[in-house]
Image 1 (cartoon, rainbow, N blue to C red):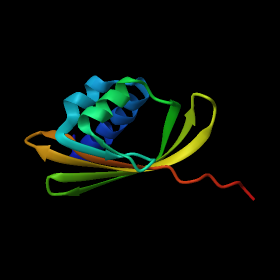
Image 2 (cartoon, one colour):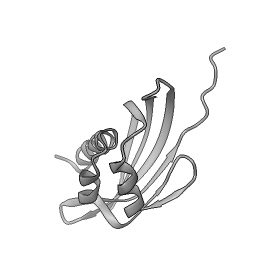
Image 3 (spheres, rainbow, N blue to C red):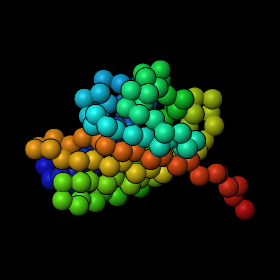
Length: 123
């Protein structure tokens, strides 16, 4: 499997783990100094991110609409856009960038940034 394919697969697993509240998946794959800039602008360190993940997602589903993976040596950027539905039925869209770093054959997530742009009404 190519590095691009590996990162695409990890991205799908990342989304599934988020929806399932699978903190163990993240615990195995987040770098010790992982930081997430959440959609509300808050900065989450690794332990806070794991705690919030374990508490469960507010989303019922998440569909990946666009995924772009780029490699820069041992660094991989996953830039994606997805459509989601919250458990209360509210729809939305998010864009995110996850930064992975390779160590040997393994990839660790060192950073994530999530943006939820405002929904605009169709004309």
